[in-house]
Image (cartoon, rainbow, N blue to C red; front, side, top):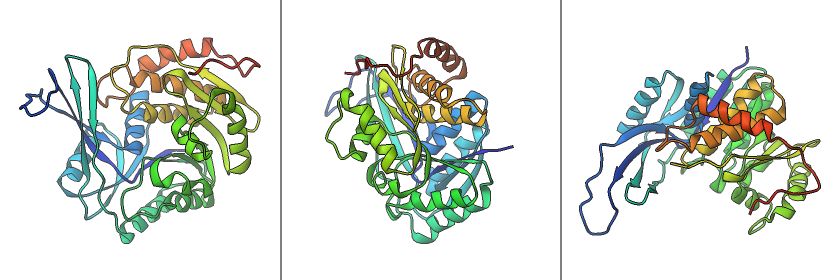
Length: 322
């Protein structure tokens, strides 16, 4: 049976807490923190587990936070392949002001990953991926790793007749366009960068998506539109998927939950349209809970029922996404 492998090159221990009022120059007494294993691929593996799926979670880790990270992943019952590095895994902080329900997120850079370490990652990918498997690379690259690292990963996946799924940002985004990609999920800001535009209007989105697919080795493009849903684009399909309006408690991990939902359905052999709809359902479900709790299956399944009932393929009238 085919499997899913997630790859995280810049993982993180996410610390989540809350406080009644954030003001400067004053000691703020926070609630006891909760810790979550984080980073794109790790979040996808966690979300897959919540949906009832399994994956091999591959990532780099080092230092005391790296040990903590491995413990957190293990506690969730996720199979992992850890590549040890000399640098310390990072720790991020999110604080919710309970007086305003606003969340403040503090991120720090990742460690420097040396050549011998990232080359070991490539070797681990080659050793673990088989024909028909999905390799899901998600997240930014830390210091020391070539900006076109995901291109090297995609070559290994292609050689093994697997499918490469990519969700990245930052310096790796544009260089990764030389890769052979089965599924890519940029958000609207990232897609603007890919198209060389400062911003994209709704009237341009269809044509830009078509041009992007014509010019890049990407089979399936899903542009996340946040609370508005997503645009699914392939050589044959151009479809808007509307997301239901919900009360959002946290947006952390929504994109990772979306990717998890899509790959979960792909592994089940579902259609591209159902894949994208379930991805939107999972992304929306993740926003219903605070911190980095990601999506829950019962929420995702319930939202998917609504989304599939609203499913309308591309028409001459474009939905209002502004």
